[in-house]
Image 1 (tube, helix red, strand yellow):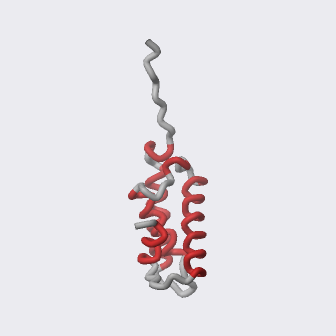
Image 2 (cartoon, rainbow, N blue to C red):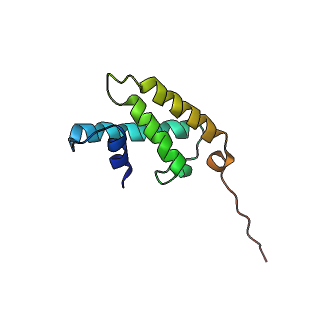
Image 3 (cartoon, rainbow, N blue to C red):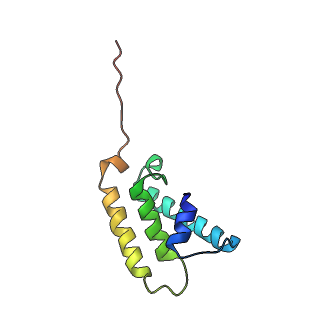
Length: 102
């Protein structure tokens, strides 16, 4: 399932309305950009990574809609997960591979 479809399900969107799709795609892009500017390597901010995907879902659920009573809870979960990811070298340090020159 594509990430946009998972975000729609998470945000309880059942329509294919272009306005919702555009807004949700913007939120996905904003979440990725926020992760990258916070220290996550761009190569690691991919939709196929389970932790990154969950982080993006929290971000979208927290920012979608005008009257969302649960928004603070989702935004807090996003911030905590982002902090955790930023503390992991797998997400913040580029791996260097050394070849044997022989």
